[in-house]
Image (cartoon, rainbow, N blue to C red):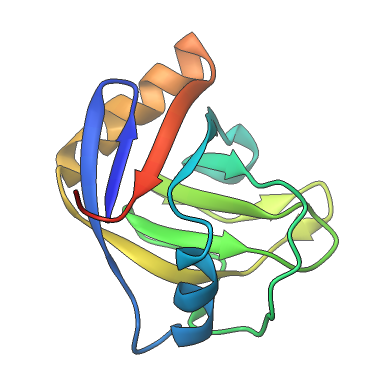
Length: 135
């Protein structure tokens, strides 16, 4: 899986064993092109607001405290669907309080550039992001 945003490229692997339903449903959205923005509310992270989406859903590998590079999908609950990518200390939350998202991807290359991505989105604003299967 490749993630392109703000002149940076990251590679990620699916967490098939721990989140099979989430990975399967997310694959159906690919390639995905959306805006990525900073998520100051949750700490050091960036996120992609997802269009209203009603996939078959259950908690799989869910967490509120992802490590840098652990990509979470939040698809059901009081807040809007989104992908969260932490680049540092992050507690996934919204105006409704702490949320849990399914850890479906882990960034495996260029992890050291995640803080740069966070700074770009914080100080320069939203950037186009494309997520696709490997070319």
